[in-house]
Image (cartoon, rainbow, N blue to C red):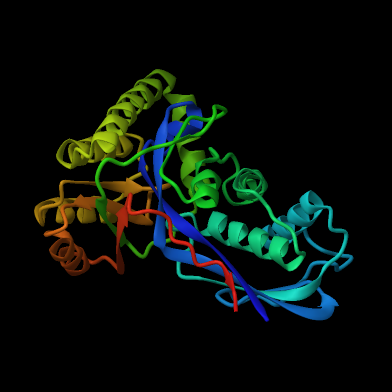
Length: 320
């Protein structure tokens, strides 16, 4: 009998980088791309097999377990939270979320793993508790994470997020056609966050003004989302991209894809995530989404994913 659990990717629509310093951000789940964990009962100590990574199987009860390993840390944190001292079984992980591309791959893998461990042990882990555990693992990936990745991935709902404040679920007034285009350039979020921190130390007043402007855009964007006002929302996305350019977290490849999306009729476009590689996200109407996707591939995108935000979460956790 196989036990299946999963978690979605995510995209930050507005507010990346500024959110680390207290500005609001808006993120949405990308339910069409997911990390999945399939657990099976065995008589051996819990073993984690990451099918997408070139790494040996990980035995969680090993004496020399390295808790600097994200999979090891998530396993131990989840078992401790559930009050499980030891566990037998095997969990296989696989993901179609690109790694180091700003789409929440690390958080999704951790969340899927946590859910699988809970179900393998016959227990339940709530979304809030799961988010808190994934956040601890995100510190390994990103150094000083804002907490937005774990929050949206664990809940699989659009969120309005301000660091150290209660998370708010956003109602989306009309479904949003989103096109995510991957530059194919890996860009660990930790590096981009560190670069912005250095810029803030060198130019505190300028970066503070930029963060404030991003915050104003995010608040306006929330109103547009709740009203289903796609055209002004797109304009706000493009304005947010220009401010991220001023923080030096864009790149030639990202800017090229943003321009390609806008030239093909997108309502707006911006980098999404850490930047300096990774992805852009474009907003389209339903009629133009496919043509924009083709234009992005022609412009050099390595992968294009289309999804509809606001269409409801995707649930595929089950027992085979």
